[in-house]
Length: 79
Image (cartoon, rainbow, N blue to C red; front, side):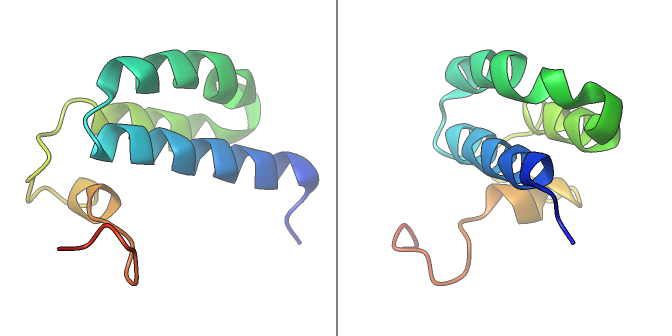
């Protein structure tokens, strides 16, 4: 079962990913500092992985980053 804190972390992480995916890297860094870093004790690996997204280009073929940078299936943002 996912706890309330885990759900909030997942929401904040998804917001961060969407910011990066849409080219808002600076906003994503501020968002991470405010909303993700406080979870470093319980979600450190996910935070480190998320930080790696900033180093990748939008059309990366590097796994697992390419999956996270692509729009979700069924998204209205798909071309």
